[in-house]
Image 1: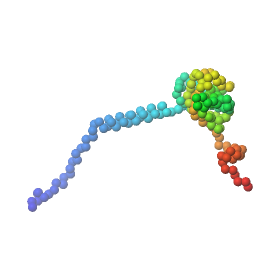
Image 2: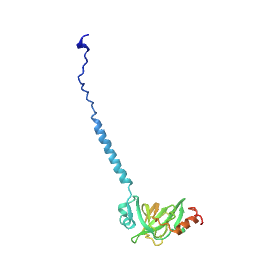
Image 3: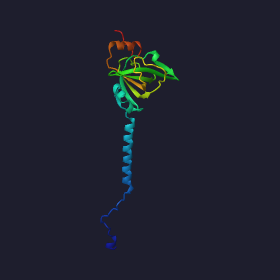
Image 4: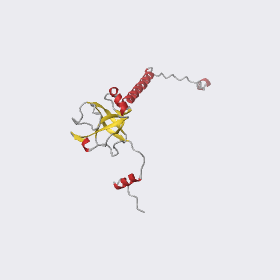
Length: 182
């Protein structure tokens, strides 16, 4: 055999350049841009401001019908005449106060068990102006200024102080098992 014909070509091959489509980087930048815009829109539309009642009253016109959280303390316990059923929905009418500023509140549903006079609450909802769900209702010692805060969520501040009388009360109601007598 001829030596020239049997020798292999061992010189390195030059790989063919892979051509990335010119539109691919543009598409990647566009996707990143859309993701950033969607994230910013989501954060703006789903964030809720948290305002004490006095600031919320000052900023009523800026807040408009946007949902937010308001902080205050009920000036009285909810009494049976303040809770009514209208068209199958339960409403509770009460007033909260913060730094001497009163806000009339209409809550959909029953307030939580810890809801009581002087115990701070955070309400989630929005401002309303005009007629109440119960026409002619007057808030006892309330603002009664034509504005009211409509809420469907009441969060009550509570402490971690589990005094003996609270534990005894919980035992009596069957919420915790009774301690065995010694």
